[in-house]
Amino acid sequence: MERFSISVTLGKASNPHGANLEHNNRNFIAQNVHRDQIPQNILFKQQDVQEAYAELFDDAVAEYNAKQKQPCRRIKDYYAHISSGKREEPYYEVIVQLGDCKDTPCGSHRAEIAQKILSEYAAMFQARNKNLHVFNSVMHLDEASPHLHIDFIPFYTQGRQRGLSKGVSMKAALKEMGIAPKNSGANQLVIWEERERRELERLLLRREYQREDKHATHPHLTVEEYKAWKDARRYMSVFKEHRQIQPEEVRKALHMKEQIEVLTRRNESLEQKMYSPYKSFFYPHPDKQAFVQAALDRERIPYRETDNGFEAQECYVDAIRKIEAQYKEPPSSLRDKLRDDIDRVLMMSRNFDEFLKRLEAERYEIKRGKYIAAKPENAQNFIRLKSLGNMYNETALRKRISIKQAYENDLLQKTENAKKSRAPGYTVLIVMQNYILYFSEGYFPVRKKNPKGLLTWENDAVLDKLTALNEKLNQGATKLSLRRDADLKQQEVEALKERLQQYDGYIRNDTDLLECEQVLFRGKDSARFTPAQARERLNGSPFSAGNWRELERKIENTKVSRQYVAESLNKAETELREAIDLLETCDQVLGGSFLQTMAQKELQRRNAENGAVPNGQADADAPPERVQFTQRRR
Picture 1 (cartoon, rainbow, N blue to C red):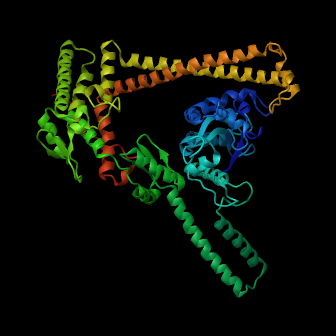
Picture 2 (cartoon, rainbow, N blue to C red):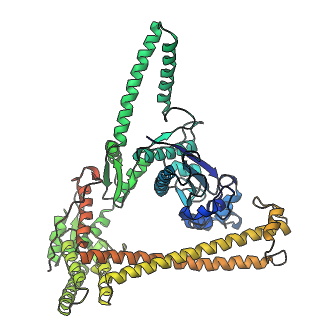
Picture 3 (cartoon, rainbow, N blue to C red):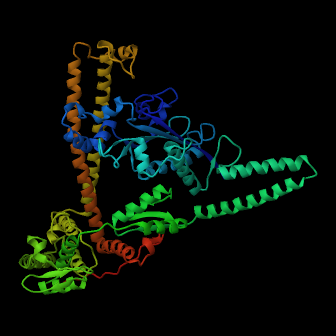
């Protein structure tokens, strides 16, 4: 079985050799870099560090500044504030490598294996380290052997009564991630680095490779296993040197044999766990899922996130069930729950009497009279519906039902007209009708377009999506044209990203020139440029001591242009997501699987909620349970 050594090295931004973004992004090319192989490097993420700071901390800084009466206490630039201070590092960099330049050189078969494992590790890094914001991540394949550079900003969001509610702190970030120091030899950074090595070891073992310790001739062992291994070596030496064994040595040898047997059984148990199948876990409430995953992080139980929850190996099921038992659902207002149930039940009802009967079926006791009131299950008092707000008195509820009926009748008429005229959107209208019917029968949950608004068919996210698709098809759109629209929008996003990177490069270059000008002509101390380096950098530049303000204006103008491109990129990315969503909806509607797919996800959620699937657990590789629907119309 092949072995790979594991290297995880953490560096600091304040140390030029600990974190070097210029080197990572190949803005500076060292002598050990093969220039012709630079295009082979894999860029996972590249975000300007100051932009990352703005994304993370602008709201917290604004909140903090608003509370400061003295202007001198306000923070103008949080990145500069942290960089100039001595308490915290502005960011950290971890370098991760499998093998070395001798046994895993770039271009070799082992390098291909290392590249795949490191790619998976990089993809999972952010999800596993939720308080370490990755702003730059790249794999270098143009040096001696493949390795990762991951730059991240550690941040806290809890436990601060004074100062910023969210700020930079490696210690606090690791604490929120459940990593606490054990002793002077095992501080938080040591524990975190070892956790990352264990994750790499897990990825190796999944592919049937083993971890190699470069500093010993034995496989990677725990402290207990290492002591047993050393004792075994010592006793083997005694057996070879002495033909006559003393009774005390015999007893020690027998004890050693028992230890070896115990460790062998433990190793077999660990291997069995390692290769146990994966189970899927999903929960009806996002808060419960977040609670469980946070506990898994603290207890170092490995898992991988999915669209509906996460997957963990079968050997951890008992531990996960114990964690689930500790969760306590936060108390919710009876009045808020009653409003939500009224909204849902009302949209399932054809008239007011049916609405009240359905509300009773939801385990509410109904008191009819001048003012209709409902008493939730296990509650002591009735709640008058009119006390819930202007849209919940009897008159308003009856009007809401009539508006609902008018929408459904209008949809029915549109469907009939589309059938007669053979309109392209006829299939979509049929799906909309069936969705309303299945919603009325309780197959689907509430999906509001505007979460704060009342539930109406005009405020239903699914119907809104289908309405948009119907309009597109009636305007002449096809699956091919929708796919082409998505491709064009993708190209626009990529072009805007490229322009954004260009502006970032311009700003970095001009900022460097400005700093060189300050070093050379204004006597500024710089950790980045000596006077000789500054003179060389300014050689050939149009800027000098006499026109440095023009350079400042140029930087500001570039930043304004960059901001415009960034806003355009955000808008284009939103439109791209909408275009992709519309294309997927079209594929499912025209393929007849739209309602089926929705029903499968909802059935899975309800099975978890009702206990039909133990603790929201299912085989990760099992095919989804199918819900049989027949297309029908009212």
